[in-house]
Image (tube, rainbow, N blue to C red; front, side):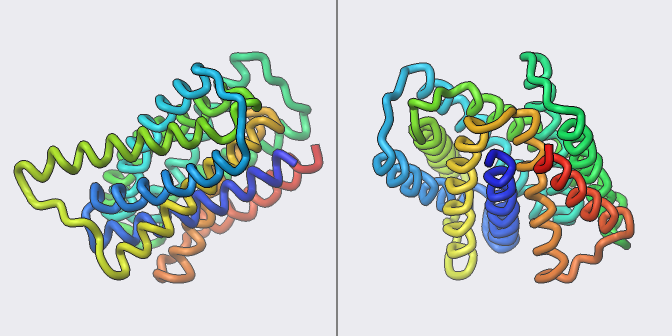
Length: 280
């Protein structure tokens, strides 16, 4: 079940990143984050109240810190997606974001079966191959996007580790506190920016894209919490990290970004790794 939930997380995260990146192409990153995170808070409130829970203070604290690093990661990721090639930024973010929780899991004694471990290695390697970049991408674009992607991956990977520390009894309240914290930070940052310059909120199509990104973001976070509570973090993290593969596919289908041979091979290997993890 954890693997299936991880796939859903990947789809939601990948699609949300695509929408967020597209929104920042015609609007400011802070403005897009305000809209997306406020929508995410609204969705998290509905889910948390509908499910109910017995929440400990520690769970709320983990949620707060997860929200801080998550919004930093999203800001870096959206910026990278807007200024660099999507098929470079998204997969590199995935590799780094998956390695951090995998290392954490092994350090804390998680030991999956050999079959699952092989699948995890394949998935991580597949993300690296997809990160080779599309054909005819300027070197400067690749380098700039890669640096941003590494920083984004570190932040997002840390948020996943923090979510994994929450107790099942807390329900979805850690997601709510995370999204409330993220929204508060973004609003405060935009207020500070507006003291020196105009920071318009997205309008029209960009606003719709930002709303969609927020809805998918809170959906992915909620399903991720379920996945982490039903499986090992060393298994869930690489599966969830395949999300950028969906970003790449959407960029290829909708934006016409060309995929190189290594990227195509990487996507095929990712599917093989997913089969092994599911079978293990």
